[in-house]
Image 1 (cartoon, rainbow, N blue to C red):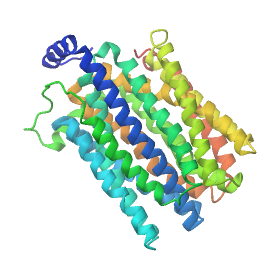
Image 2 (cartoon, rainbow, N blue to C red; image 1 turned 90 degrees about the vertical axis):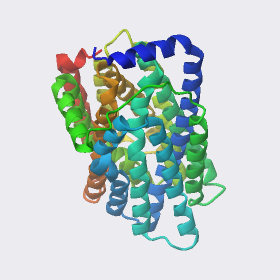
Image 3 (cartoon, helix red, strand yellow; image 1 turned 120 degrees about the vertical axis):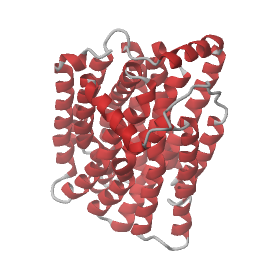
Amino acid sequence: MPCEKGFGINFYLYSMTNHSIQKRNLSFLWLAQTMSQAGDAIYQLALLWLVLEISNSPIITGFIAMSAYLPALLFGLFAGVFSDKFNRFKLMIFSNVGQALTVVIIPFLLLNGHDSLWLICGLAFLRSCFNTFFQPALQSFIPMLFPRDGIVKINAILATSGQIAWMIGPFFAGVLLTLVSLPNLFLVDAVSFILSIGFLLFIVQPNLPIGTKGASQWDELKSGLSFLYSQKPLYWMIIITFINNLFIMGPAIVGLPILVKSSLHGTASDFAFIEGCMAAGALIGSFLVTKLTGKLSNGLIWGIGLFLDGITYSFIYWTNSVEMTMLMIFFHGIGIPLIMVSRTSIVQMHTPNKFHGRLFSVVHLGVVGTTAISTALVGLITSMISVKLLFHVIGIGAALCGIVAMAVPSLRKLK
């Protein structure tokens, strides 16, 4: 297993003498992630429903959703270079501050009668620019705080922050919408980032050197991509991630609100509760990952997750009520942590920390970057065919990605 000598020695001393600090760090990192991701859940719901209300157009909704994910496609790889060259913790703080300041502008515009979709599109793009720096920095920062032999468990625990956040956030948004107007949800998102920053500031960091400041960003990027290409199982795992998310992410982001509003004739609150059911299923999935770890390889868990994630989407074709959709989405959510936790752990455990920023920027590109393309396509396709048929087709395609992952020995046997 690749390992930097200096990193290993320093981290060994840190972990042996600071076990209580590790518990403290895990607690505050979990709280910070729960806060910010609950805000993300509320923001996503508010943004998509707002655009649907203003435009009443699936195509425009898909375009606005694309603008919110496009920065990962444009700048994601260089965000990983920054993560490997500079202080990852400071990048995380910088990202949260930028997102809070950006999102707070939206309700002030709306409350003053400025409901231009172009302005909303620009702010969604800017908020996503700041977020592009956060994910590679976070995933690279985690192995600096915790030992490699427990990294799967750590990732599973941290993943529950997202599931709880995406369960509480939409339900909270659904309740809020009965009391306040839609623009106020953006203020809640801004506050969530401020609270997240407060928790992050309590984290104690090990004194570990990272990066080589002498090399150019372009050279650093090329060296990271060359390393990834030399690691064939990881390389093909990323390729499958790109293909799978091209199927899954657009329907997940744009397809669900269109399904609820146009096909099921539901409300914003119905959409919020469906999103909450997905998060509840994902919480069960995180618990399942911890039980499967050690019994199955991470590669096999990842393949199972891909298959479950896709096949459950195809079942939405037969749903005819909000309640039935909530049930289907719950089972869909179970597969999400199987994918995310196993994939993150594979990268963290099988590669040197000095490359983590660049490698996770590629993963982020595969998840969020393809979302920009997928959301735009969904908006266009649902203007021509029923959204239920779309879910059925893309679900089968995504499930096939899981079958390929489980069938290839080098992927299936990744520890």
